[in-house]
Amino acid sequence: MCGIVGYIGPKEKKEILLDGLQELEYRGYDSAGIAIVEEGALHHFKAVGKLENLRRKTENFTSSGFGTAIGHTRWATHGKPTELNAHPHLGKFSYVVHNGIIENYQALKRELQEEGIDFLSQTDTETIVHLFEKYYTETQDAFEAFRKTVEKLEGAYATLLITEVAPDTIFFAKNGSPMLIGFDGDDIYFASSDTAVIGKAKEVYYLEDGEYGYAKSGKVHLFDANGEKEFTCKPLPADKLSAQKEGYRFFMEKEIYEQSEVVGDAMLGRVQDESIYFEELSEGFFDGIEAIKICACGTSYHAALTASYLFERIAKIRCEVEIASEFRYKEPLLSSDTLFVTISQSGETADTLEALKMAKRAGLKSLTVCNVDNSSIVRESDTAILTRAGIEKGVASTKAFATQTMALWMLVLYIGEKRGTIDKETLCREIDAMRHVPKALKVTDTLHARIHRLSKRYLHGHGFFFIGRDIFYPLALEGALKLKEISYLHAEGYPAGEMKHGPIALADSELFTIALMPKTMHYEKIKSNVEELSARDATICAISPLPFELADDFIPTTFDTHPMVEFFEMMVITQLLAMEIAIRLGNDVDMPRNLAKSVTVE
Ligand code: AGP
Image (cartoon, rainbow, N blue to C red; front, side, top):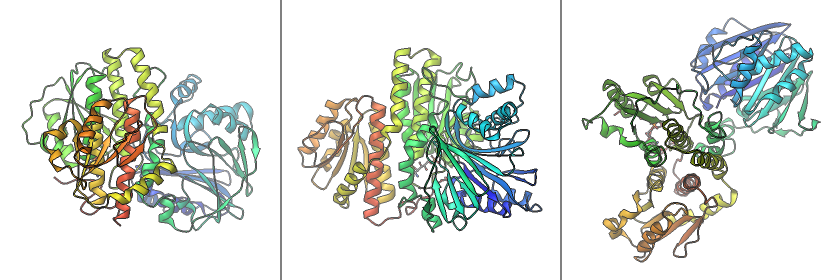
């Protein structure tokens, strides 16, 4: 989730930009840059790593007089975190910053290159500035050139553009990624989150998707598909931390609500009409691979376990899953036809990193599914598929798990297509189901209110069982882990069919069973497992698209046509349930006791 700031006015611009970017650090980044146009001159600075590096580069620069300015912190999605890939991106006489993913950038880039335009970076963003300059050359009208540019973009973007040919104007456009405009008299600010303009702007307008326009001489001209439009500003919140949470009580809550958006980001440019495309994977990457071994910890291990069912069922490739801390010391038998896959949100988990090094010493090809580019595990792997979840501040992982699972599901289809083990009809059915997932992840007020109400009944008891079958077994493990992590109540994830082999001895009214009962995966079997528990007076909370009369609590789901869509919808419910119980218990949801966001020790 990149950070964007912009300013047009007579104030000193460097400090406005750097202070604004500083307030956006919480969004996570791996490089940063600023660009300023004033008195006809273009200035720009970029640096990899922390903002401090950019401050050092600009320490002898100050701006003066009226001008325009843009700044950016980049979270790499296309292209490594390098100075060349850092924003702002330069054309011949213009600069652009962008947050989001231009889904059709390869086609646009090819067209521009065929017209002789050279690209410096590997990013999708650079396409924007070259398109603008191409249209400006044709029309000699900066706003018309910007409008035509925006018209060509597909995907998610929040973008600012400044140019020598219109030194008193900032152009902006928003679709799918957040951006706001701040006002303080004739000073106009832009930012991807209001934390960057608190203390500067007095009121803000939050741009809607499909809106674009320009700011000039203290006035903003706003447009949408129907032409120029009026807009109304709101007063700006005063507290920075609450602004970073953007109105949510905890970062974990915000990140649960973000899942619909970030899973959409994870799919952008990869899920195509009838195939899956990973620009990170070379054509022959899977040549000679006959098996997959996935290694991870915690929540990432649960994503791995989920994917193992899909790799074997859909891609018809053997798949084993290992807990990294076990794998490291078991003297595993490894063969070179096995692809070693690691999964890690942080990319710094010591056990997973050491397991990867073991596999590499044994000569295995490696791939990681990771959320942090340039992390140790990414650097150690032959290649990386970035999950694009943006920074995850809640220690209890949510959106990272959702994007890991989506990335792995895409990888399953990609490998199945490469191996010829998935027919077109199946592939299209899976892709169609994928496209429903962002909607299935949307949290409705009704659902959240229902979970808040019923959570009051689950604050005691002698423990929880989360039970499920097939891919809902790893989801049961994950739901139990979420609850343990933030409520400190004991919970176990268990294969539903295993309860009769011992654990059912625990069944009584103080044993809470969260039963995942999807319509599309062994419903009758899970139903009978739950009936066995209910017959022994266990308290049942059923999560299902089908009514279940024996449930003491029932949370209805709506998507019932594909197991993976049911999986994602039920995942949100288990996350919200854990969070609402923890909140009632007065726990620190974002920073639970004894836990760290990244376990870099053994
Ligand atoms: C998840 O909620 C936990 N915080 C923890 O289990 C985590 O998933 C595990 O430590 C692995 O971390 P990683 O994904 O960064 O490798």
